[in-house]
Length: 323
Image (cartoon, rainbow, N blue to C red; front, side):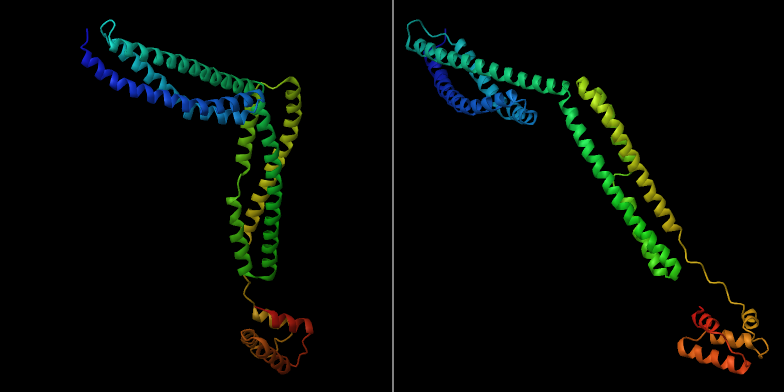
């Protein structure tokens, strides 16, 4: 039998610990009850996002401290059980009183803990049933329809941008403008950064089809999904085709090149302009075309005068514009 002094010392440690546990349990009760009410309503309303939110709160923030209170209570009861005060002693009365109060707290904590675990189980079963009923598949279904239409419109807009760049490249070739051509080619590089590309769209589409096949949709929803999948398939094909059109446009833009001017045969040019009787007409033409503006015009007029030939306006324009 334990000495009365030892029992008193043990009780002096258990009593404040028991009081602290009782206080914490009371504080937790109010917090827990609010969550129980909110969670029960979410389950009744089958509000999956809210159930998931409350379930996370329960499992991460509420159950752990409640479990700790129950464990601490059981530990104190275990310590009381080991005490052996003398019959009829004041220590026995204190041990019995503490055992009674802690036993009542234990019963309350166990009951509440069981209710919380029941609620946790009910929430998980509700979420599982919702998934089995195809609710999450319906959400993915709606998201896929919105996503496909969004990507199709984006692809069409981007294709127009590529067409505009291709027009710029064509105009640059026509005008012999290397700077504009270089700008069009550089801007076409942005195509590689546009996401998702055709491969990514097809991969996402394939994943969607597999997910829907594994979900528990009702027959009516399965029938509608079959119809929608046929419609979605056309959108996917159109997105792939538009992406291919963009890639083809980029290839054409990058294939553009301003042709190098062929060297002028000045002797043949002199003969064509009937200037070949003029001495060194080919050399004088070559020298004239090295000049620009009024200087070139003056040189051509002198050649024309010395050769005694009247050049046509078309021939003069060609000589003035020659590179």
